[in-house]
Image (cartoon, rainbow, N blue to C red):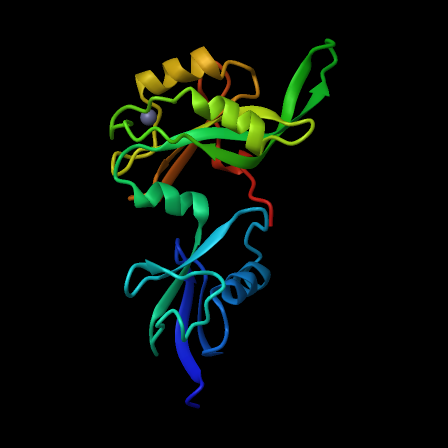
Length: 217
Ligand SMILES: [Zn+2]
């Protein structure tokens, strides 16, 4: 039908994909919502829809017709954080905000059992280079003012290593020890170019096994 477009929709990691026939009057937001629902993507994340054929992001409220989508185009649903990190070839990062649920061990000590990351507050420091991340001072107050809700705290930090692999450098360990030294403090490093990520926890940057990291569906 003239009003329909046959398109391919996939997630950025390409583990989910579908061939769909969609009306030209559908919007990018419709497609994101359908992907979140049908593929059980984490619902608390912001997503962007990118035309992988042209590399251009679709305005969420615009129709496919208005966005210039053509028959056979590939649309990719990307987490906004991943998109932000992938868009930059320099190292990017920020703070993680959420909650810590701890347990009382038999010896009376409290141990972090679960750390929930709800939001990320990106650092806006454009002077960050590909090999070193400088947390600009403002990110701390922005995280407190904008990202944190009642009962939440800064639970860690994240940064990207574009093309270098996901690992903690000696300097990353220093940063973790200096600023993220609680037993629950998380360090998340992502290589958007290679599609790798790793999580570390506590002052000694203990690496978390992938099974310890859950994504809420
Ligand atoms: Zn690093």
